[in-house]
Amino acid sequence: MRDPVSSFDVGALMMSSPLDPHAIIDRPGADPASVVGKPAPPPLLHETVDLGGLIVDKDAAVRLRDGTTIYLDIYRPTSEATDLPVLLAWGPYGKHWVTKATFPGSGVDPEWISPHTGFEAPDPVYWTRHGYAVAYADPRGLWHSEGDFSHNGPQERDDLYDTIEWLGASTWSNGRVGMLGVSYLAGSQYQAASVKPPSLKAISPWECFADWYREFATHGGIPETGFRPRVSTNVSYGLSRTEDTAANLEAHPLDDWYYADKYGDLATIDVPAYVVASWSDHGLHTRGTLNAFAAMVSPNKWLEVHGQKKWQYFYEPASIERQRVFFDTFLKQRESGIHDWPRVRAELRDTGDSAESRWVELPDWPVAERFETLHLDAATRSLSGAPPETGAHATFDPQTESFDAAYLFTQDRDVIGPVSLSIWLSADESTDADVFVVVRKLRADGTEVLFPINSLFADGPVALGWLRASHRALDLTRSTALVPYHPHDAEQPLTPGVPVCLNIEVWASGTTFHAGESLVLTIQGRDWMKRPLSGGVPPLQILHEESRTVGRWSICTGSTHESVLRLPVVESD
Image 1 (tube, rainbow, N blue to C red):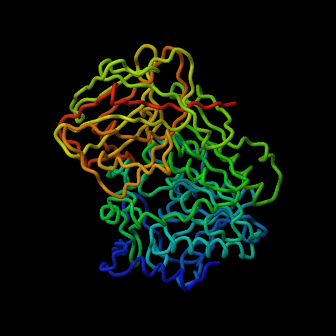
Image 2: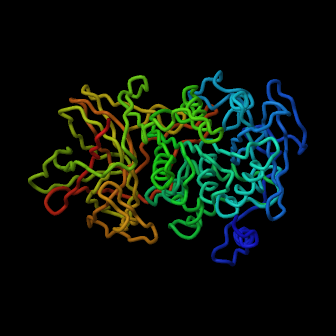
Image 3: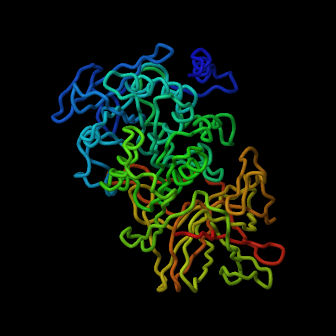
């Protein structure tokens, strides 16, 4: 355990005076009774309730190392049950918010889960039936839990450590704690595992970003404006003060100290881990989940990458059975065949219908970097294996038009992994440009194949990438041919009309292209799609509405302006 005094001092510093250059902006907590879109929490009351088939200890008090008390709801098979492994779900949404209903379009069959299921959390009815306890926590400073809320970071890691050790020491516990859940409930697992509480024996993070700046706050340096206000609201309900996430992201447009220690060191994670990512969460979780798995040093780690809607896949009965096989192995110490699992298992999408996908095994992630280079020709608006014989340029209005270039496959090809684009571009009337890259799949008849995206929708492309041109500087020590890495620590304005080379990371995907089908590269100065957010659909779409794109762009190819797309070449089983 880390020194309690120094850990408390870190937490105090985080909510210090605004004159402190490293102060984090906070705000008074919003009254939990004022919550919109879900039930208000009931009054704080510790009681044991029989739910018929299981019991719940409501508002169980956990006293943390600095004297702060937070509250848990703990589900067990019976009040007499002992020797139970524990699954902890740690998130900001309110432990009281339980339901079998999910958002329209999620694909979750209500028959898969009980009405006691927390948002993005394991269903306590299923797990208690199989001999587990399930704990839902309200973190420090949220809902009725005491203290000031820090959105990830050292204070939350200390609180996770203390809570896990409290659960492990409980009289009904077998001393072995695991963590399971989606999104925030997955990111909290990164944090807990990085500080190594002795009772934490296994984690299963399903889809969470791992880089606050590159995957949540901005994409390629372009501020994300659709999802992050919702996140800031989610962490606003408490009786003291809470970190004002949206204000902090606005105050830190470059990658600086604010983002540096949100999750801890992922490379210290050595606990057994069953990690699940998706190709369908571009703009939020895909990149981070894959990178978190790659960073973990556990000898017992497995990765599964699907292409479906994330909540649907998390709650599918077959997925829940795999979760149980994993946790039975490490929390019940029951051999269940998990060591025969492939290290990495990935779904290759084809038509957008998961029934027509196929699954492949990969030796590891990331796989060895091999790639094919496709050359862009602005004159013919095409991609080919050979560079164009002459230079050319294409000029267009990126706010109303797109630059499209197609590559025709002459044989079947699997594209698995990240794609990179190096493009020579000039903003003819501006000193900056927000560049949006879309990779799409067209059938032989020219119609587009659409895939699940953003949790609720089924109209997405193959892959997405972004870059603000003034953030084009590369960290050459961290960049590879397929994954350019931008430090995002300063801006370099463009000179209007002068082309510069932009190296753009396109997030990883797994897609089969058949002979006669085409890959289409689309470059534009706006989001790939905007939907009307109505009819009760929550604003889960990733948006970028603070654009610096002004005027026309020119894309240059050939000769001294070699523009290329690099596709990964992967051997799969």
